[in-house]
Amino acid sequence: MMKHAKVTPSIGFLKQLYSKIKENDVQSVSAQLTFYLILSFFPFMIFIMTLVGYANISVEDRINDLREIMPAEAITIIEEILKEVSVGRSQSLLSFGMLATLWAASRGINGIIKALNKAYDIEENRALWKVKGISFLATLVIGIVVLLSILLLVFGSWVGDQLFLLFHLPEGLHQLWNLLQYMVPLLVMVIVFTLVYWIAPNRKMSYKEALPGAIFTTFGWIATSMLFSIYVSRFGEFTKTYGSLGGVIVLLIWLYISSMIILIGGVMNATLAFRRGK
Image (cartoon, rainbow, N blue to C red):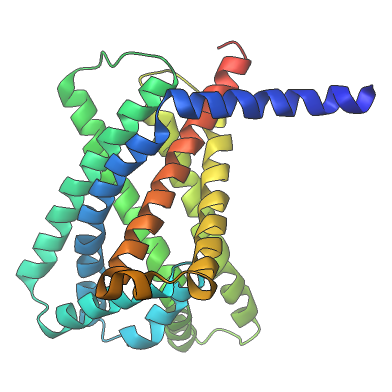
C-alpha cells in the first residue's frame, strides 16, 4: 500500500501533463516555432561563422564537435553553408545575419509567450509594446548567452590554449578547463530557459517555479538530440528516401523536436503550478 501511495502522485502528474500537452496542441505550436527557428538558425550560423572567420579559427576542425549532439546530415548542410559564408564574409553579411536572427528569433519568442499563456490558462493583457519589448530583450539576452555558450562549447579548447599561452597558467589547470567548457554551457542553458519560463507568461511567479521546466528542457534537449542523432546514423535512411533533401529533412525534424522540448518544459511548469493550486 505504501509503495502504491508513492507511485500514484507521479502517475497523476504524468497524466495531467499529457492532458495539458494535448489540450495546448503542443505539436502544432512546435511546428510554428520550428518555422521561426529555421529562419533564425542559418542567419545565426552566418553571424557566428563570420565572427569566427575574423578570428582565423579553423572551422573545419571545430565543427566536428557538434556531431556529438546533432545528426550528421544536419551537420553536412551547415558545413556547406559555412563554406560559402567563409568565402564571402563581409561587414554587410555580419549585419544581415544579426538583424535577421533578431527578427526571426523574436517572432519565435512571441510564439513561446502565446503557448505559455495558454498553458497557464491566462489571457495576454499586457500592452503590445511591452510584449514586443520582452520578446526583443529576451532574444537579445538569449542570443548573447547562447553565442558565448556555443563559442565555449565548440571553440573551448582553442580559447583555453590561448588563455594558457597568454597568462602562462600551470598545465594542471587544463583538466579543470576541459570540465568547465562543458559544464558552463549546461549551467547557462538552465539559466536561459529559467529566464524564458519566468518572464514570458503573463503571470507573476518566482524563478524557482520556472526552474523545473528549465532543467527538464536542458537535459531533455541534449538527450533527445543525441538519441535522434544515433537513430539517424544507424537506422534512418533519409538520404536514400529524400536524396539531397535528406539533410534538410533531418535538420527540420531536429528543430521540431527541440521546439517540442522547449514547449513541454513550459507546460510542465504550468502543470506543477496547477497541482500546487496556484
